Amino acid sequence: MKRRQFLTASLLTSGALLLKPWEKLGAATTFSGKSKGPVVLSTWRFGMQANEAAWQVLGKGGKALDAVEQGVRVVEADPAERSVGYGGRPDRDGRVTLDACIMDEQANIGSVACLEYIKHPISVARALMEKTPHVMLVGEGALRFALDQGFKKENLLTPESEAEWKEWRKTSKYEPVVNIENHDTIGMIALDAAGNLSGACTTSGMAFKMHGRVGDSPIIGAGLFVDNEVGAATATGHGEEVIRVVGSHLVVMLMRQGKKPAAACKEAVELILEKFKKRGADLKSAQIGFIAINKQGEYGGYALKPGFNFAVYNAAGNRLEDAQSLMPW
Image 1 (cartoon, helix red, strand yellow):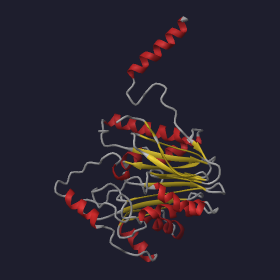
Image 2: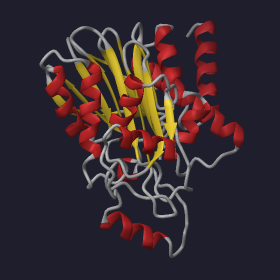
Image 3: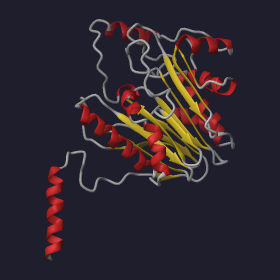
Image 4: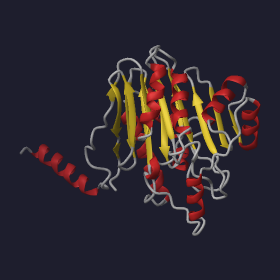
């Protein structure tokens, strides 16, 4: 072996010994798929049923904006999904509060947070976007607007979620668990036949949170961001960590710089991990996931830890894909 080759090999080997388990030398390449024609992505397993509804719009040449709204509404209305919409787990006061945002190809945005009694916050967010000069309403103001727009006021606390809340009150211990109940968000992004992008994000937030707590999901740039010249991204997981780096905006800006979608998601996760370590924060219960799509129909996702998956629907059909992750368990 030549001296230069020996030195190079020695440096690489010694460098590898200094790396953390999640910082493997020559880390696994991130996967990005590519779709011809329309495509929709959504977070977690419940994204499969959401994608079916979205494809009813996209598959007929419809707009991405209509597709993402119709898609996430399916999950909002399902009482079996305990982290979104009707049936979502309540806050520590026993109140179900919902957050959502939506963004179209022209950078029109609408958002609602801490909204009670309305099953479909995503549609309230769209109404806000299309019918007012504002971009975000919260709490009582969001509810008043929804009722003025004809949305039905109804009890969102199901017996199952109420029973869990009452059981939680026995200890009142707040301890998020990684990947439990698909975590807390459905985010959906879509590219339509006209080449336009839109996205939606909706959640009931972390179970038994403090009343009034808002995570990344309704915050444009954090839980969702769309740039029709570049691509779209959405996030799931611990919202406070996504907010710290304005995660979805970061992913899209990295794609603007030429990164493929999965590589952009990976870099955003790496930055979040860096912030974690600098703060000395406990990583035990943390999970973050991003999905992204660019104007060319390339898509991908990445997560902090294993277990995050996302649903993809294009001309090849609807399927669930596992995202690569930065850290082991």
